[in-house]
Image (cartoon, rainbow, N blue to C red):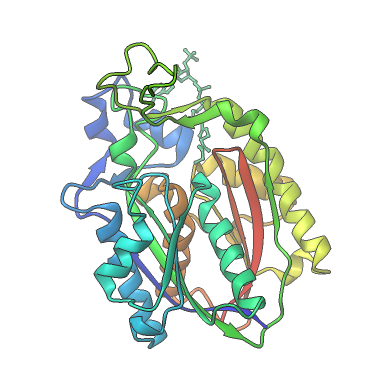
Length: 326
Ligand code: UT7
């Protein structure tokens, strides 16, 4: 018994910003961005929010699953760009879609968030605690992007992806998930610190300061290219599977060169590594469910196909999980 995906959905903002439009903001070029990242455009929220995109993706996933929202036991949202810290995004999605019976909470594991949320959902199902779970990755990264930093602003986009998991008599696969807090400084998004009356001062210049994603791009690049192939090999080994058993590797969509380098290190052909960062940029925890949804819409997924999901990012966090398509 484990969780099986029976519905997926996605939502991206209407407004599309291509690379040329960023040339007016920072010293960059369409050619540099395409060559170094594979990104051509990204969707940026104007009217949409982390909650509205999550709710839209969730409703689409529920429709395909043919489940009324009242039958959802748990809503688990992965996000690092919530509208508010409290109430959590999952509770707001509950209100939007009318999933009145659901338990709701958010999970924070940056770009590994969807894999961590998927693994958490499966663990709840395998433990017999919940039957139907909505797992969502939703990000409005444009709210936390420093639009004057060319090292990051060319990378990110907004969007949401959702999956409905239900308890099914399917093979249970062990995940390979990891964290290394000692290297967390390479990718950060700080939040405001207030003073307290017991001696803690707010950091100098903190008043009214906004915080943005800061990244040592090369360090993250190297970390991803080294750790993901190891995590893939490990998840295959512990589940007694071989590369030939895997139809697709669905990697977090951060950079085309990272995906290509992982494929090369694994000695696997490029066609097993679908990509869509060209259209959406890096949408953090939304990237994997957005890609799965797109693959489904393109009829790339068939019953029994085994996929390896692989996330990596801030924390540092990374990991792999295996799913069997319905
Ligand atoms: O979601 C999970 C976390 N994120 C990631 O996985 C991102 C991982 N990192 C990356 O994708 C890449 O490191 C970046 C795309 C961020 C940067 O690519 P890079 O090939 O590592 O470039 P670099 O930082 O080594 O910079 C090369 C050059 C530098 O100029 P000099 O020193 O050679 O003169 C940069 O200043 O490119 C310059 N540069 C740019 N030029 C034009 C950096 N950003 C830009 C830019 N446009 N946007």
